[in-house]
Amino acid sequence: MATRAAYKALGKDPARYRGSAEALLRRVIANKGLPRINAVVDVINLVSVESRLPVGLYDLAAVSGDIVFRAGRAGETYKGIGKYDLNLEDLPLFADAIGPHGSATSDSERTMVTASTKNIIALIVSFGGAADLPRWTQRMCELLTLYAAAQNCESSVVS
Amino acid sequence: MSRILVRVGEGVASAHRNVSSRAHGHPPSLCDTLQMPIPRVTIDDGMKKKCARVTLGCVTAEVQAQDAPAGIRASIGDARSL
Image 1 (cartoon, each protein chain N blue to C red):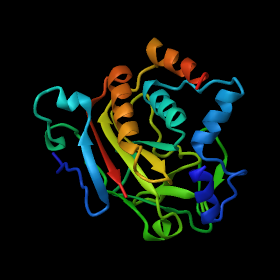
Image 2 (spheres, each protein chain N blue to C red):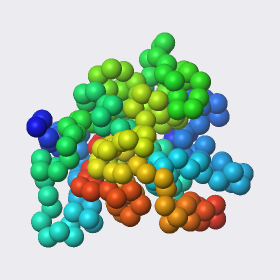
Image 3 (tube, rainbow over the protein chains, first blue to last red):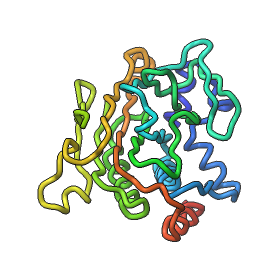
């Protein structure tokens, strides 16, 4: 609910542009299951469904410079993973030195995790405060360690 | 090797290490481990103004992105009953 309220506050229709967690939950409710991509993506999708929070997942080798979480600007777009060009205006998004590369709705192909990815950064988006985030970052590290042979899993909360 | 650092900056409210790090007695520094610079992650002031409670959970790790093993497939199956 907090994600929908945030989309409205930013000027984006949450019924047309859903948060990624809501989209995954709708798949589960419709008995379509979760997409099965690889161990890392599957873990992140599982944590997103469990937490009901959007999660961005990026290959660190493809990220350039620092990352800022901000609202999309007029004219900004990127090609979503397996999708069409996404209109990013007013959408909560992640941008690096090159430009937008992920959002709370759908991530881009530019920084997506593939079978050759070695180092990742996952960003859990909470519009309702930090209270539950340590639980979910720890859950993510546990699952990544168990299923994706993760090493040196580190977590923090940014506010 | 590049300088590797967890850049926590002003925006970080708290940080903790995961269970796998704690299991080795003393947590290793990212400076000794990840072979990739960690980007600084911040939230834009305009976003904070419109969404006052916005917060991000940040996780970094070295991984093997192979096909999902049976265990995670079972967990995903369990998610249908959430």
